[in-house]
Image (cartoon, rainbow, N blue to C red):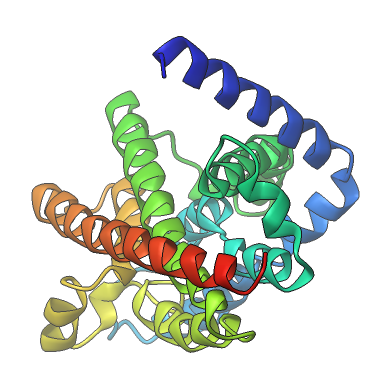
Length: 264
């Protein structure tokens, strides 16, 4: 299989899913707005920062939660619900007849959705700076490039983990329940609720060896100019991605055999 063929297939899938996403602009706006939790939490932390005992200023909180909002727009993943529905409804059988692994359909569909929501995200960022003009800042080009790379890796990490959970659908009709349990830990340990600087030191050290902070906190901290251990972060992300990839491939081979054995 040549590189030219792979690129042509990827381009076709991207164009197809992008066109599909653009058709539902109003729904995209709703999806973007449903990720406004960081702004709600920002108000609570701004009130708490008035005491001066937290260690972060109100401006730092404003910029941080804006960065969290931006990062979350790129790492939202729903593959477990799509895969679960396809398997239960029998649509997976049609996917298996195609020469393209279903994994790539889901991954490229997610990437296309990111591009479709980009104009809405830019509009909301401009609106945010109008409401909070004191928070306006322009990151350096190197910061933007590093942040973009980390966001992309963080998205791929979360996608691989959720896709691994999705493959449990071969054995249970409620694989999404596993994701809901995982999501509780994700909310509290990823930096969505609060920046990791406010965590107790021991909890923060342990958390930095889990995959959670690298999906939100790590790229958000880089974007606002916080000092982070970039190489440790890349190492931990690579480790968890490798684990998720190997487990997902093993589950896929076992699952497809069972799925075919059921007469699919």
